[in-house]
Length: 380
Ligand code: SF4
Image (cartoon, rainbow, N blue to C red; front, side, top):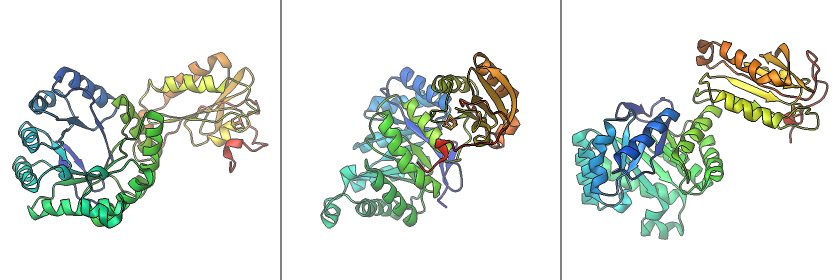
């Protein structure tokens, strides 16, 4: 278990839930824009926010931003130690530095200031700032080399009696990200921030992050995560929530289950799934809703779901926990679902026991056990 670290009023590490982090892409000195973006990110579930501090104006904007937001504010510093000091003096709840970009005596000054203001420092290491001798030793950037570089940096902090540290070693390579984080989790007691750098546009970035974080988080490695996406940071937060949700690490609203459709489907399942997804965006209940393609397989396969819809020809059945409760015309499906979702109690969902399955299948074999295998259940 990692050490607990306090960032503003948020504690990370230990056995605490993984926290979702994002970074603004506004000009930090533009307080209005930056606050607006952070508030939007908060609404979507962001728990810790990082802002770039590339100049004095950005550092001086921190108090004005901080007084209008509700989550810890991290200052991201590159190269200039004076900006790190200024960010701390201006209320940053944590700073993120890459010691590879700073001289040792500057790092010492930053450590002293962080000690004085009692804030943690995230030590970031990446392939771009790997020491020459480490590169020569390993011949290229390797997870072992990155960890060796990190160890040297950590020692600098520990020698000064500073252990209010969060670690982050990033790579744009998924396998290296997994390996390096496994190594640092074994070797150091500090909380780890997970991220894949330069991950790309949304689809690639989400896939890379899900692959890299999945195994690590499942093994208990990682205390905060950021899904870096070239795009709107709201998408980062949404993706992070889904990754945590699908790993059962966070209850964060409804989940849609839908079958891939096959030759048995006799309803516009894709269209219906899209409409149900929209419907689910209107609730924050922690439920699973399955939309499947046939009545024969639907209720049985989605029996863990709270609510299910299984489609037939022009009709569908609604079921709860695998039990069919009614049959409705195709045009009534959404309305019927909405009623059932509204009737589900919040307490039930907060316990994490809830699933709502909307299952739409093309058959109408209500109450019958499946007589064929759903292709979605097979080895393929
Ligand atoms: S058999 Fe499976 S994939 Fe095919 S429609 Fe039914 S639930 Fe969907």
